[in-house]
Amino acid sequence: RKEVEQDPGPFNVPEGATVAFNCTYSNSASQSFFWYRQDCRKEPKLLMSVYSSGNEDGRFTAQLNRASQYISLLIRDSKLSDSATYLCVVNPLTDSWGKLQFGAGTQVVVTP
Amino acid sequence: DGGITQSPKYLFRKEGQNVTLSCEQNLNHDAMYWYRQDPGQGLRLIYYSQIVNDFQKGDIAEGYSVSREKKESFPLTVTSAQKNPTAFYLCASSIGASGGPAKNIQYFGAGTRLSVL
Image 1 (cartoon, each protein chain N blue to C red):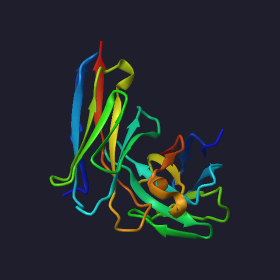
Image 2 (cartoon, rainbow over the protein chains, first blue to last red; image 1 turned 45 degrees about the vertical axis):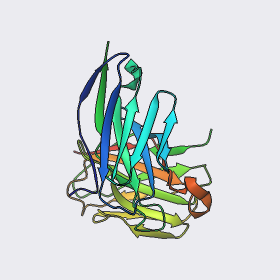
Image 3 (cartoon, chains in turn red, brown; image 1 turned 90 degrees about the vertical axis):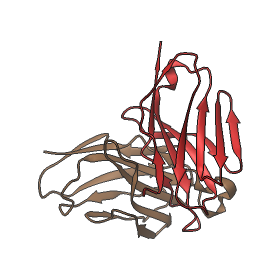
């Protein structure tokens, strides 16, 4: 089993619609979680951090479910510019810090 | 502007050749990392350094070497022993242990695409 698993997609979303997708992680001791956005052939960029039950930033909402060991990302009122691959990143705390675990990403395609 | 600079953007390696990828940061971060990304896969950690003059192997260190002589710089050498070097290489940095809750947030350079001739 992979340490961090994501549905690769693609999730095809009409502009203005809502899309949500999950990420599951294997280490129940994981404390902090991140969503990064990666555009095609570019570097990942931090979208949001999740330290407790969830986080909201504008149209983006992340929810953490520790009992089931997954985090979700919801995008409301999707824009064409939201088309990207979204990487789920977990701090497993096997070391005190630094070594993050990356999912392979979920591709989102927003269509006009 | 503070950030992480990787160079070159594209690099071609001949068989049997060692090549070095540059990574420089002016964020005053203690920790630096090298990742490899292959199509359809997550980032895989090659080497990381939590402090100057110290570094540790990541999950796929074979065929790679690094140095950390200055806080700002963490170059990666892809040696001839790495038989499948074609990939997108990403350098990242984070504040480090003194960074509080943000210590684990990693910021990435624009990457280097390495191909084999």
